[in-house]
Image 1 (tube, helix red, strand yellow):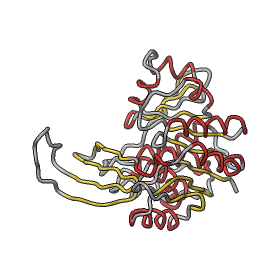
Image 2 (cartoon, one colour):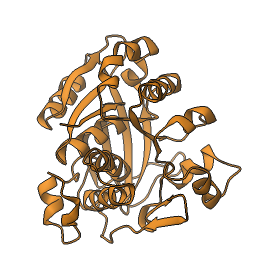
Image 3 (cartoon, helix red, strand yellow):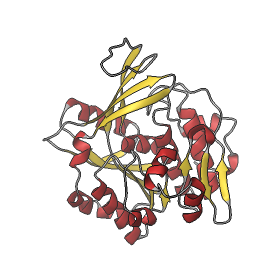
Image 4 (cartoon, helix red, strand yellow):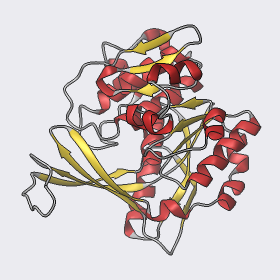
Length: 301
């Protein structure tokens, strides 16, 4: 079976829904409060596992009550957690999310997620080298992300690099990622000197820009391509990008070509925003197959 390794953040999401976002110094009354599971790494792992992926999670949590719940949630979603390490000196990571009219704004506190270091990645070398594909994001220290991508490159292991949250990244690192999946704002920070079309042409079949309702753009080596999104009424867009990346990894390991893998990711993301919570709406493979947009030629089992 193909092995998907996700190295990344594992956090608790504290989610508030409201009619508006408060101005500086303003207190408002919200509508709802929920605590859910999150972290971009854990989200992408859950998205892959629900779609049938054989998923190994590597990351760091604290030794608090949140860590116990975070690990239990991963296990419940059939994710291997042997490579998740608890640390004592910092709390588990958290994200504080405000949702207004279906769109979210987020304050992320890394906590234990920043405790992972290059020595830990060295200890993960065998896991990485035996993986079919590795997925990594920016909710880890950048030197750790760089090391993971370099290790994958040297070992000829495919890597999906989701450069979120946005920050500057060394050009040589970007060039070694098999697939680079920023959204539009992240692309502009990574490549301020390039238009979207120029960036896509410079990195054909590698740079994949997710643009929400406008779909996903990439260049196939001959021309620029747009893969349309599926139209739904959003309930909560939190985790849509993570769902896309997790589903995209599953499709790639199932042997789908790039365009089909993007369409599969788009469908998973569209289904995910119809429910509340970053992980709450992530579809199972059975739910994907129930959708009228599911393509039988995908043949994912």
